[in-house]
Length: 199
Image 1 (cartoon, rainbow, N blue to C red):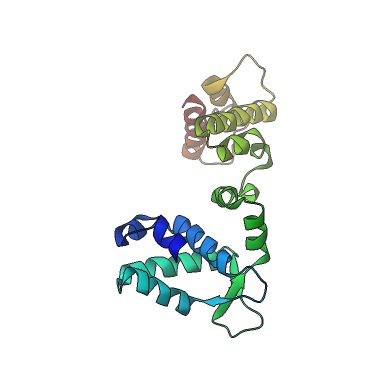
Image 2: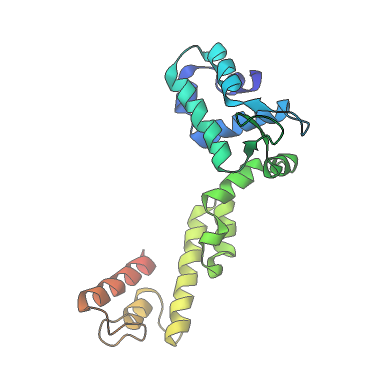
């Protein structure tokens, strides 16, 4: 438990910690105990050890139970196949991520999974996001949107930003306007695109 109590020395530090951060600390603790595939642990024995370190504070126990469940729901711990249901081990994914030293990167990647993004945003935008350069990531995403509007509408390079969006999504004459949509919706879509590029 030394690794956990060093990182979170007080009850309040545990309660202030985001669940993912607490879970990472728990995973590192479990990894130190489970170097072999036969090694296992249980939530009950883990929480008994937590209780001995932090006392009977129910909020702390719930915080660590949440961290344990976070590890399970993210596929980093699983039921040990050679023990009863209450005993767990590290998953292959956890062992791979830990051996490659990429746990922080893996967590960052899961915050914005690549498969949730349009393919055109998986290049520069996603790379800048993963580097923590958020303003550039947003700029690149909106630049991609502008290029997509230009390509889809067939409009020339002389129109940029809000002028491009205003023309392409004009409620009456826009090349990308769905004339079957209700007039208010057509206007709203133009406003959305102009606002996005303008901002």
